[in-house]
Image (cartoon, rainbow, N blue to C red; front, side, top):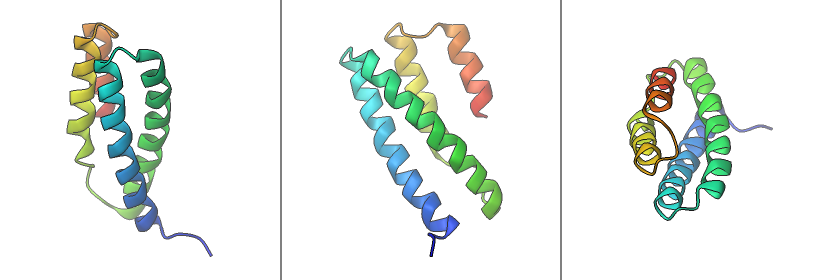
Length: 93
């Protein structure tokens, strides 16, 4: 017997929040190589959450704000350009 989509969604949301916080601190600490690996995982979770939101008929997640702040942190650390940041923001919304 599988896990319900709603329960899976909230588990992913919790995991995503924790990963975003970890990624933010790794970028600030200059550990960008590790942060890039976490970013790949975050993107996979993000896509799965979007699919579950559509399946469940939910509104957009509030984690968009957290993701936007993270992009600002990457930009401030000099890891992504302003154009990359704007492109990623457009994709998010």
